[in-house]
Image (cartoon, rainbow, N blue to C red; front, top):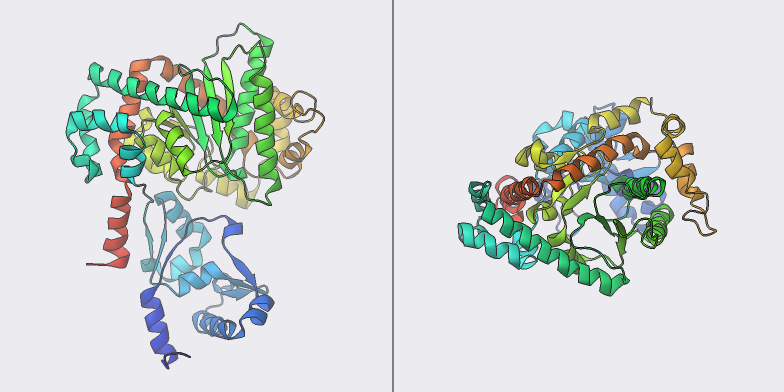
Length: 463
């Protein structure tokens, strides 16, 4: 209006035909809200326009949830919805949650605006480039058409009972594990065994992604060994890679705990190298290209309903790892594509989590007091087992006083069971290789080629 001399109606028409809003998270801290007074002081003209957008949009509506400006704040996600012709989430479950919960009043007002575009990954980087050994045996079997048409990976299903190919698949994985073994030793000085299960959790360090649940299970396994040093435990290497936001104190406490647990377990003669714990510092894409081809268990254990999509789950699936996870984000679609026989699913559903959040009824302290495994794990956050004089009080009291907001204690039993199922499956190496093959074959759906085509067909409409 100011620079081009358009009327309000003309300018609004241009704006709402130009912008589409992709929501990448429903986490409240990421749905930006700006102080009304701050915006007024920094950019009064912009605030005038936002106020008029708000006035026109809410005219005739008495639903407070629709207001772009409320409680002294400017709600940027609401402004984005109102000013866009399309609103999408980045996985089916995420898009459903946006419609049913996060932005429900807006969806009920303009349902035609809302759609889903499941994230994708570039298979030419994460398979062709990052895993040349696997790419070669795939091309030997089905030709190189998959490089431009990733849906052709589905042709690998024809070899599900081909023992020679399954063995080739296994050999490639072992070779990639040997490479990662060298990377780990070079970066950390920790010696790992390529014949152990490589159990991998690589993603941003955030409480909802529940690295803490993973660590609690590792501590639980360690207890089992200490109680009976001759117990039969499958050799496992637990690999973490993560960065925490600079001011996120609790996330950094979790990193400190992982290091503390690793330091004890990796040097205990009773363990006898049956468990190794590795935290790879400075996690980045280049390091991920070393880790992902070697991953066998893909830890996707976020609190159901909180992960918008995830793409690490897709990258590890594409490289033959089996997803051990909750029905959250794109895990739901992975599970649907490969079938429940080829994933390891556990934990609360998104509906159950949302019901607890909205209606209460969850009491973490009761689980702490009734489950001796959890009590033992948590009590050791404060004794000298891992603390070396500096306890993990913050984590301990947060779970009890704040009622375990990410349902770590609630899902612990189910997670332990899932880990035991994973071990049982892995010990049948042929079965595991078949699971790996199915995951690779079905992963073409998650190529960004498909995602980009979906956006273009429904939103961008470029010729």
